[in-house]
Length: 181
Image (cartoon, rainbow, N blue to C red; front, side, top):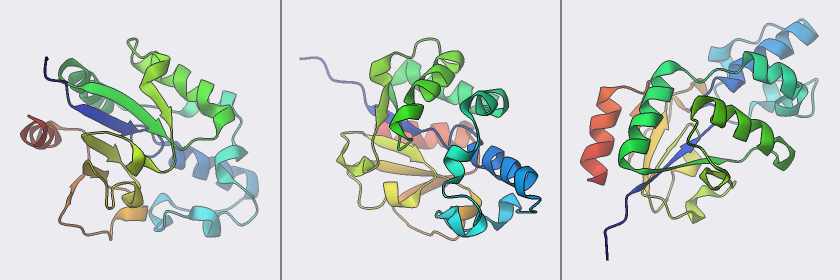
């Protein structure tokens, strides 16, 4: 039986894209606020956006599509991973937003099919070999190796069992290769 390729999962919001910055800018514009990205020091950002019930649904998807960007370094890194590993995208996004995220991923990665997108809030139940995420609790006590994308809401997290990274670069690639091969 052939050996299976390792499975690498990528979170989307806050990891591959800069969605929180878009949500924050729209909030500031709509309410005349001055919330700074660096001030978002907790994963639960509701205290920074008291006028809205849910900051993630405040921005219309059409507007989000215009402003949302997956960086070149993230695109290149995911493509490189796709050449060596099985790649999936794991998101806790609202079910009615899944088509939007799927189309965004297809625009960035033409090889993406529906089976590459998984909606899951409790990511520890997934059978992955590695997960790249911005939410520490998705990496905590997980059966896979965790890679934490540094963001203001996780900068104070320190865990010897999680690899932290700032950008999708060669150092992250070398770490992933050393662990999974």
